[in-house]
Image (tube, rainbow, N blue to C red; front, side):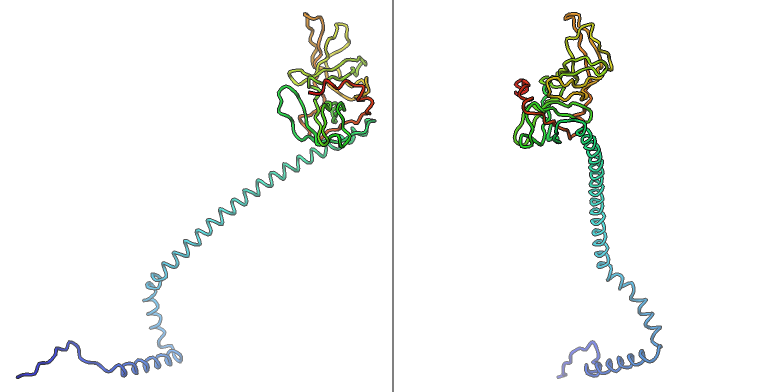
Length: 291
């Protein structure tokens, strides 16, 4: 009977040990040759050129990821820098506006100091805290009150002239009615001829009025009204208003002079409260100023 043999597709090659030894020997020879001579440089260049596309393909995901990360970081940095520049622009604008406001207030305080030197009464500089939202009364709330010597009835002035009169005080605040308020009346006189009148507030257009004038009264448009000093509450000589119009009412037979106040309470924040003597305040009828 014939012996069966297995089918062999490949011839058996050298043993694994022999192949390892051959590879080691070849490697050593290549190392020595590459270290001493440049005969393998063309082969190295050719292999580098051949594998370069595969290197780029292998490195593409990492490079793409790095590019995307760099782009996102750059976008975030540009956005943050833009926001920082916007904040800086707003802050600089606020600083500039604040500096301009301080310059204006400083100039006004200098003028107030000059006014304080021209009056004989001691004065307290006050600052407006807020203006009460009242369509019928014209008032200002100041940051000083009875603890600083301010009392109801004391006049308030600025560099333009008379602003108003204190009508209510607390230990640390004071409320003043402007001369255009219907609760305020001021003894005045015409600077041109000394004619004495009484100026009242309450005009709808935020002006003052001299009422019940006869046809013979020597008053003209453009005349300046100043405090007369009668009663001792308002010092004499403080500017009050300029006469804008004189209107005759045939129904009553009297004329009404309308004046534009020379003070600017709507424009400034700092004013002077004149500390008139307590005895003069008691002589004044201040009941009409209390609500």
